[in-house]
Image (tube, rainbow, N blue to C red; front, side, top):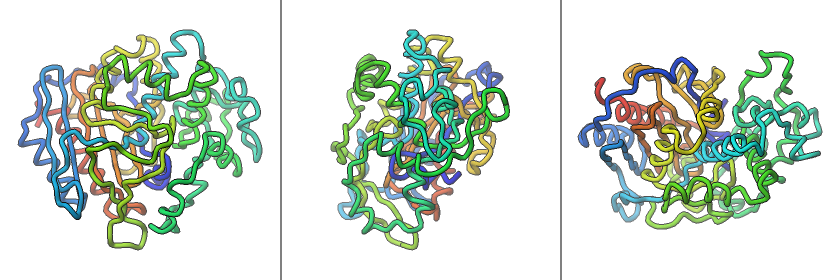
Length: 399
Protein backbone atom coordinates (compact mmCIF):
# COMPACT_ATOMS: atom_id res chain seq x y z
CA UNK A 1 0.00 0.00 0.00
CA UNK A 2 1.27 3.43 -0.92
CA UNK A 3 0.14 5.56 2.00
CA UNK A 4 0.75 8.84 0.26
CA UNK A 5 -0.87 8.13 -3.08
CA UNK A 6 -4.06 6.69 -1.64
CA UNK A 7 -4.19 9.52 0.86
CA UNK A 8 -4.14 12.42 -1.47
CA UNK A 9 -7.43 13.55 -2.97
CA UNK A 10 -9.53 12.56 0.01
CA UNK A 11 -7.46 11.82 3.01
CA UNK A 12 -5.36 8.80 3.31
CA UNK A 13 -3.08 7.54 5.94
CA UNK A 14 -2.24 4.37 7.72
CA UNK A 15 -3.46 3.11 10.88
CA UNK A 16 -3.95 0.24 13.10
CA UNK A 17 -5.41 -0.71 16.37
CA UNK A 18 -4.52 -2.41 19.53
CA UNK A 19 -4.34 -6.14 19.83
CA UNK A 20 -6.29 -7.44 22.86
CA UNK A 21 -3.09 -8.16 24.76
CA UNK A 22 -1.85 -4.62 24.29
CA UNK A 23 -5.01 -3.10 25.70
CA UNK A 24 -4.10 -4.30 29.16
CA UNK A 25 -0.54 -2.94 29.04
CA UNK A 26 0.49 -0.70 31.87
CA UNK A 27 -0.03 2.99 31.21
CA UNK A 28 3.04 5.23 31.35
CA UNK A 29 3.57 7.94 33.89
CA UNK A 30 1.31 10.97 33.51
CA UNK A 31 4.23 13.43 33.57
CA UNK A 32 4.45 15.52 30.41
CA UNK A 33 7.65 15.68 28.38
CA UNK A 34 9.74 18.76 28.85
CA UNK A 35 9.24 21.60 26.41
CA UNK A 36 12.87 21.15 25.38
CA UNK A 37 12.31 17.54 24.36
CA UNK A 38 9.22 18.45 22.35
CA UNK A 39 11.01 21.33 20.64
CA UNK A 40 13.96 19.10 19.76
CA UNK A 41 11.63 16.63 18.05
CA UNK A 42 9.72 19.40 16.23
CA UNK A 43 13.04 20.76 14.97
CA UNK A 44 13.94 17.27 13.75
CA UNK A 45 10.77 17.14 11.64
CA UNK A 46 11.59 20.56 10.19
CA UNK A 47 15.10 19.34 9.39
CA UNK A 48 13.66 16.73 7.00
CA UNK A 49 12.53 19.58 4.74
CA UNK A 50 9.10 20.35 6.17
CA UNK A 51 8.17 24.02 5.94
CA UNK A 52 6.15 24.23 9.15
CA UNK A 53 5.54 22.04 12.21
CA UNK A 54 3.12 22.44 15.11
CA UNK A 55 3.04 19.90 17.95
CA UNK A 56 1.05 19.62 21.15
CA UNK A 57 1.01 17.14 24.02
CA UNK A 58 -1.94 17.06 26.41
CA UNK A 59 -2.28 15.15 29.66
CA UNK A 60 -4.81 15.22 32.48
CA UNK A 61 -2.48 17.69 34.20
CA UNK A 62 -1.26 20.12 31.56
CA UNK A 63 -0.14 20.62 27.97
CA UNK A 64 3.07 21.41 26.08
CA UNK A 65 3.45 22.94 22.62
CA UNK A 66 6.28 23.43 20.14
CA UNK A 67 6.63 24.77 16.63
CA UNK A 68 9.34 24.89 13.99
CA UNK A 69 9.83 26.35 10.54
CA UNK A 70 7.56 28.96 9.03
CA UNK A 71 3.88 29.34 8.23
CA UNK A 72 4.58 30.67 4.73
CA UNK A 73 7.71 30.71 2.58
CA UNK A 74 7.02 34.27 1.45
CA UNK A 75 6.21 35.99 4.73
CA UNK A 76 8.51 33.79 6.85
CA UNK A 77 6.14 34.28 9.77
CA UNK A 78 6.12 31.51 12.44
CA UNK A 79 3.43 28.85 12.48
CA UNK A 80 0.45 30.18 14.52
CA UNK A 81 0.02 28.38 17.83
CA UNK A 82 -3.68 27.85 17.21
CA UNK A 83 -3.47 26.85 13.53
CA UNK A 84 -6.36 25.14 11.83
CA UNK A 85 -5.46 22.28 9.49
CA UNK A 86 -7.03 19.42 7.58
CA UNK A 87 -6.65 16.26 9.63
CA UNK A 88 -7.23 14.04 6.58
CA UNK A 89 -7.86 10.40 7.40
CA UNK A 90 -7.80 11.11 11.12
CA UNK A 91 -11.44 11.88 10.24
CA UNK A 92 -12.01 8.13 9.98
CA UNK A 93 -11.75 7.74 13.76
CA UNK A 94 -14.59 10.25 14.17
CA UNK A 95 -16.70 8.40 11.58
CA UNK A 96 -16.08 5.03 13.20
CA UNK A 97 -16.97 6.45 16.63
CA UNK A 98 -20.34 7.65 15.33
CA UNK A 99 -21.02 4.28 13.69
CA UNK A 100 -20.16 2.44 16.91
CA UNK A 101 -22.41 4.75 18.92
CA UNK A 102 -25.24 3.70 16.60
CA UNK A 103 -24.29 0.07 17.19
CA UNK A 104 -24.50 0.68 20.95
CA UNK A 105 -27.95 2.20 20.47
CA UNK A 106 -29.18 -0.81 18.49
CA UNK A 107 -29.71 1.25 15.34
CA UNK A 108 -26.92 -0.43 13.38
CA UNK A 109 -25.16 -3.78 13.49
CA UNK A 110 -21.57 -4.49 12.60
CA UNK A 111 -22.85 -7.58 10.78
CA UNK A 112 -25.24 -5.55 8.61
CA UNK A 113 -24.34 -5.69 4.94
CA UNK A 114 -23.78 -2.70 2.73
CA UNK A 115 -26.58 -3.96 0.52
CA UNK A 116 -29.06 -3.78 3.42
CA UNK A 117 -28.49 -0.05 3.87
CA UNK A 118 -27.41 0.98 0.37
CA UNK A 119 -29.10 -1.40 -2.09
CA UNK A 120 -27.51 -1.48 -5.52
CA UNK A 121 -24.67 0.91 -4.64
CA UNK A 122 -21.82 -1.62 -4.40
CA UNK A 123 -22.15 -3.70 -7.52
CA UNK A 124 -20.57 -4.31 -10.92
CA UNK A 125 -17.21 -5.74 -12.00
CA UNK A 126 -17.44 -8.36 -9.26
CA UNK A 127 -18.08 -5.91 -6.42
CA UNK A 128 -20.79 -7.30 -4.15
CA UNK A 129 -22.38 -5.30 -1.35
CA UNK A 130 -24.17 -8.42 -0.12
CA UNK A 131 -20.83 -9.85 1.03
CA UNK A 132 -19.45 -6.74 2.71
CA UNK A 133 -20.42 -5.82 6.27
CA UNK A 134 -20.20 -2.60 8.26
CA UNK A 135 -17.36 -4.21 10.19
CA UNK A 136 -15.50 -4.86 6.92
CA UNK A 137 -15.82 -1.18 6.04
CA UNK A 138 -14.61 0.13 9.38
CA UNK A 139 -11.74 -2.38 9.63
CA UNK A 140 -10.62 -1.96 6.01
CA UNK A 141 -11.20 -5.63 5.16
CA UNK A 142 -13.80 -5.15 2.41
CA UNK A 143 -11.51 -5.65 -0.57
CA UNK A 144 -12.99 -2.58 -2.26
CA UNK A 145 -10.63 -0.44 -4.28
CA UNK A 146 -9.76 3.06 -3.13
CA UNK A 147 -11.54 5.57 -5.37
CA UNK A 148 -8.56 7.91 -4.94
CA UNK A 149 -6.16 5.31 -6.29
CA UNK A 150 -8.53 4.56 -9.18
CA UNK A 151 -8.53 8.27 -10.08
CA UNK A 152 -4.82 8.92 -9.55
CA UNK A 153 -3.10 5.62 -10.26
CA UNK A 154 0.38 5.90 -8.74
CA UNK A 155 0.14 9.69 -8.75
CA UNK A 156 3.14 10.07 -11.07
CA UNK A 157 1.13 11.95 -13.67
CA UNK A 158 -0.23 14.56 -11.29
CA UNK A 159 1.20 18.04 -11.78
CA UNK A 160 0.57 21.39 -10.07
CA UNK A 161 -1.30 22.45 -13.21
CA UNK A 162 -3.63 19.43 -13.09
CA UNK A 163 -4.16 19.98 -9.39
CA UNK A 164 -5.21 23.60 -9.92
CA UNK A 165 -7.46 22.59 -12.81
CA UNK A 166 -9.39 20.08 -10.72
CA UNK A 167 -9.19 21.32 -7.14
CA UNK A 168 -12.72 22.79 -7.16
CA UNK A 169 -14.32 19.90 -9.04
CA UNK A 170 -17.26 18.62 -6.98
CA UNK A 171 -17.39 14.92 -6.17
CA UNK A 172 -20.29 13.45 -4.22
CA UNK A 173 -20.02 10.29 -2.09
CA UNK A 174 -22.02 8.40 -4.71
CA UNK A 175 -19.66 9.63 -7.42
CA UNK A 176 -16.67 8.46 -5.38
CA UNK A 177 -18.15 5.01 -4.81
CA UNK A 178 -19.13 4.77 -8.48
CA UNK A 179 -15.49 5.44 -9.41
CA UNK A 180 -14.36 2.55 -7.22
CA UNK A 181 -16.96 0.29 -8.83
CA UNK A 182 -15.41 0.71 -12.28
CA UNK A 183 -12.75 -1.87 -11.44
CA UNK A 184 -12.84 -5.34 -9.94
CA UNK A 185 -12.33 -5.59 -6.17
CA UNK A 186 -9.07 -6.76 -4.69
CA UNK A 187 -11.07 -9.58 -3.09
CA UNK A 188 -14.60 -10.26 -1.87
CA UNK A 189 -14.96 -11.08 1.84
CA UNK A 190 -16.06 -14.58 2.74
CA UNK A 191 -17.60 -14.91 6.21
CA UNK A 192 -17.09 -18.67 6.03
CA UNK A 193 -13.34 -18.26 5.61
CA UNK A 194 -11.64 -16.62 8.62
CA UNK A 195 -8.53 -15.88 6.56
CA UNK A 196 -10.56 -13.79 4.13
CA UNK A 197 -12.22 -11.90 6.98
CA UNK A 198 -8.83 -10.66 8.20
CA UNK A 199 -7.36 -9.78 4.81
CA UNK A 200 -6.58 -6.05 4.97
CA UNK A 201 -6.30 -3.26 2.42
CA UNK A 202 -6.63 0.48 2.98
CA UNK A 203 -9.40 2.15 0.99
CA UNK A 204 -11.04 5.54 1.40
CA UNK A 205 -14.11 4.05 -0.32
CA UNK A 206 -14.86 2.08 2.86
CA UNK A 207 -15.38 5.25 4.87
CA UNK A 208 -17.33 7.03 2.16
CA UNK A 209 -19.77 4.11 2.39
CA UNK A 210 -19.72 4.21 6.20
CA UNK A 211 -20.73 7.87 6.06
CA UNK A 212 -23.55 7.06 3.66
CA UNK A 213 -24.80 4.31 5.99
CA UNK A 214 -24.71 6.67 8.97
CA UNK A 215 -26.88 9.09 7.01
CA UNK A 216 -29.31 6.32 6.04
CA UNK A 217 -29.53 4.98 9.60
CA UNK A 218 -30.08 8.38 11.22
CA UNK A 219 -31.81 10.41 8.54
CA UNK A 220 -29.24 13.15 9.09
CA UNK A 221 -26.11 14.20 7.20
CA UNK A 222 -22.88 12.60 8.39
CA UNK A 223 -21.54 16.03 9.34
CA UNK A 224 -24.52 16.72 11.60
CA UNK A 225 -24.07 13.43 13.44
CA UNK A 226 -20.36 14.15 13.99
CA UNK A 227 -21.23 17.59 15.32
CA UNK A 228 -24.09 16.49 17.58
CA UNK A 229 -22.37 13.38 18.94
CA UNK A 230 -18.72 14.44 19.23
CA UNK A 231 -17.88 18.06 18.45
CA UNK A 232 -20.55 19.75 20.58
CA UNK A 233 -20.48 17.39 23.61
CA UNK A 234 -16.69 17.68 23.87
CA UNK A 235 -16.68 21.44 23.31
CA UNK A 236 -14.42 21.19 20.26
CA UNK A 237 -14.89 24.82 19.27
CA UNK A 238 -12.18 24.69 16.61
CA UNK A 239 -13.25 21.48 14.85
CA UNK A 240 -15.55 21.54 11.84
CA UNK A 241 -16.81 19.67 8.83
CA UNK A 242 -16.43 22.17 5.98
CA UNK A 243 -19.38 20.86 3.90
CA UNK A 244 -17.51 21.04 0.61
CA UNK A 245 -15.71 24.31 1.23
CA UNK A 246 -12.15 24.26 -0.10
CA UNK A 247 -10.85 26.79 2.41
CA UNK A 248 -9.28 26.41 5.83
CA UNK A 249 -10.10 29.10 8.44
CA UNK A 250 -7.43 31.46 9.69
CA UNK A 251 -5.06 31.28 11.37
CA UNK A 252 -3.37 28.48 9.50
CA UNK A 253 -0.06 27.62 7.89
CA UNK A 254 0.24 27.49 4.13
CA UNK A 255 0.06 23.90 2.91
CA UNK A 256 2.78 22.94 0.44
CA UNK A 257 3.05 19.93 -1.87
CA UNK A 258 6.08 18.70 -3.78
CA UNK A 259 4.81 17.04 -6.94
CA UNK A 260 6.57 14.12 -8.69
CA UNK A 261 9.55 15.22 -10.75
CA UNK A 262 9.62 18.68 -9.17
CA UNK A 263 12.11 20.15 -6.73
CA UNK A 264 9.98 23.14 -5.73
CA UNK A 265 7.06 23.26 -3.33
CA UNK A 266 3.62 24.28 -4.61
CA UNK A 267 1.15 26.20 -2.46
CA UNK A 268 -1.81 23.83 -2.17
CA UNK A 269 -3.48 25.46 0.80
CA UNK A 270 -6.71 25.67 -1.17
CA UNK A 271 -7.58 22.03 -1.47
CA UNK A 272 -10.56 19.84 -2.23
CA UNK A 273 -12.93 19.10 0.57
CA UNK A 274 -13.95 15.61 1.57
CA UNK A 275 -16.46 13.83 3.73
CA UNK A 276 -16.56 10.88 6.10
CA UNK A 277 -13.22 9.58 4.84
CA UNK A 278 -11.23 12.75 5.43
CA UNK A 279 -13.18 16.00 5.62
CA UNK A 280 -12.60 17.35 9.13
CA UNK A 281 -10.64 20.50 9.93
CA UNK A 282 -9.33 20.84 13.47
CA UNK A 283 -6.46 22.00 15.69
CA UNK A 284 -3.86 20.05 17.62
CA UNK A 285 -5.64 20.87 20.88
CA UNK A 286 -9.11 19.79 19.76
CA UNK A 287 -7.84 16.62 18.10
CA UNK A 288 -5.95 15.64 21.25
CA UNK A 289 -9.06 16.29 23.34
CA UNK A 290 -11.05 13.96 21.08
CA UNK A 291 -8.50 11.14 21.28
CA UNK A 292 -8.25 11.38 25.06
CA UNK A 293 -12.04 11.32 25.41
CA UNK A 294 -12.31 8.32 23.10
CA UNK A 295 -9.71 6.17 24.84
CA UNK A 296 -10.93 7.43 28.23
CA UNK A 297 -14.35 5.89 27.59
CA UNK A 298 -16.32 9.14 27.27
CA UNK A 299 -17.64 8.52 23.76
CA UNK A 300 -18.29 4.78 23.48
CA UNK A 301 -19.80 2.16 25.74
CA UNK A 302 -17.25 -0.42 26.97
CA UNK A 303 -18.49 -3.07 24.55
CA UNK A 304 -18.15 -0.79 21.53
CA UNK A 305 -14.75 0.53 22.61
CA UNK A 306 -13.61 -3.08 22.89
CA UNK A 307 -14.95 -3.76 19.40
CA UNK A 308 -13.02 -0.76 18.09
CA UNK A 309 -9.83 -2.25 19.53
CA UNK A 310 -10.22 -5.66 17.87
CA UNK A 311 -7.56 -5.60 15.20
CA UNK A 312 -6.10 -7.30 12.17
CA UNK A 313 -2.47 -7.23 11.07
CA UNK A 314 -1.17 -4.66 8.61
CA UNK A 315 1.76 -6.17 6.75
CA UNK A 316 2.66 -3.60 4.11
CA UNK A 317 3.47 -0.39 5.93
CA UNK A 318 7.21 0.01 6.21
CA UNK A 319 7.58 3.10 8.48
CA UNK A 320 6.04 1.33 11.49
CA UNK A 321 6.33 -2.47 11.56
CA UNK A 322 3.84 -4.31 13.73
CA UNK A 323 0.89 -2.02 13.01
CA UNK A 324 -2.57 -3.47 13.57
CA UNK A 325 -5.86 -1.94 12.43
CA UNK A 326 -9.15 -1.97 14.29
CA UNK A 327 -12.36 -0.07 13.61
CA UNK A 328 -11.13 3.35 12.55
CA UNK A 329 -8.18 3.38 14.94
CA UNK A 330 -4.77 1.84 14.75
CA UNK A 331 -2.20 0.42 17.14
CA UNK A 332 1.54 0.13 16.86
CA UNK A 333 4.17 -1.26 19.22
CA UNK A 334 5.91 1.22 21.47
CA UNK A 335 7.97 -0.72 23.97
CA UNK A 336 8.94 2.40 25.87
CA UNK A 337 5.24 2.91 26.64
CA UNK A 338 4.91 -0.55 28.15
CA UNK A 339 3.22 -2.05 25.10
CA UNK A 340 1.87 0.20 22.38
CA UNK A 341 -0.02 3.32 21.44
CA UNK A 342 -3.21 4.03 19.53
CA UNK A 343 -3.11 6.31 16.50
CA UNK A 344 -4.39 6.90 13.00
CA UNK A 345 -2.93 9.53 10.76
CA UNK A 346 -4.08 11.69 7.91
CA UNK A 347 -2.78 13.18 4.70
CA UNK A 348 -4.26 15.76 2.36
CA UNK A 349 -2.60 18.01 -0.18
CA UNK A 350 0.03 19.91 1.72
CA UNK A 351 -0.67 18.66 5.24
CA UNK A 352 0.25 15.53 7.17
CA UNK A 353 -1.39 14.84 10.54
CA UNK A 354 0.26 12.46 12.99
CA UNK A 355 -1.12 11.61 16.40
CA UNK A 356 -1.15 9.09 19.21
CA UNK A 357 -2.88 8.40 22.50
CA UNK A 358 -2.12 6.10 25.42
CA UNK A 359 -4.51 3.17 26.02
CA UNK A 360 -5.97 4.86 29.11
CA UNK A 361 -6.51 8.17 27.32
CA UNK A 362 -4.44 10.12 29.85
CA UNK A 363 -1.99 11.47 27.28
CA UNK A 364 -2.32 12.46 23.62
CA UNK A 365 0.16 13.92 21.15
CA UNK A 366 -0.69 15.64 17.88
CA UNK A 367 1.52 16.97 15.10
CA UNK A 368 0.54 19.02 12.05
CA UNK A 369 3.17 19.24 9.32
CA UNK A 370 2.43 21.64 6.47
CA UNK A 371 4.39 19.82 3.78
CA UNK A 372 3.50 16.74 1.75
CA UNK A 373 5.71 15.12 -0.87
CA UNK A 374 3.53 13.38 -3.44
CA UNK A 375 5.60 10.53 -4.76
CA UNK A 376 7.39 9.92 -1.48
CA UNK A 377 10.74 11.68 -2.00
CA UNK A 378 11.74 12.51 1.56
CA UNK A 379 8.28 11.78 2.93
CA UNK A 380 9.32 8.65 4.83
CA UNK A 381 11.96 10.60 6.77
CA UNK A 382 9.39 13.25 7.68
CA UNK A 383 6.88 10.60 8.78
CA UNK A 384 9.42 8.76 10.91
CA UNK A 385 10.45 11.98 12.61
CA UNK A 386 6.78 12.76 13.33
CA UNK A 387 6.18 9.31 14.76
CA UNK A 388 9.30 9.68 16.88
CA UNK A 389 7.91 12.90 18.35
CA UNK A 390 4.62 11.19 19.17
CA UNK A 391 6.32 8.26 20.86
CA UNK A 392 8.71 10.49 22.82
CA UNK A 393 5.74 12.57 23.97
CA UNK A 394 3.66 9.58 25.05
CA UNK A 395 6.50 7.68 26.70
CA UNK A 396 8.63 10.37 28.39
CA UNK A 397 9.34 8.43 31.59
CA UNK A 398 11.18 5.76 29.62
CA UNK A 399 13.53 8.14 27.81
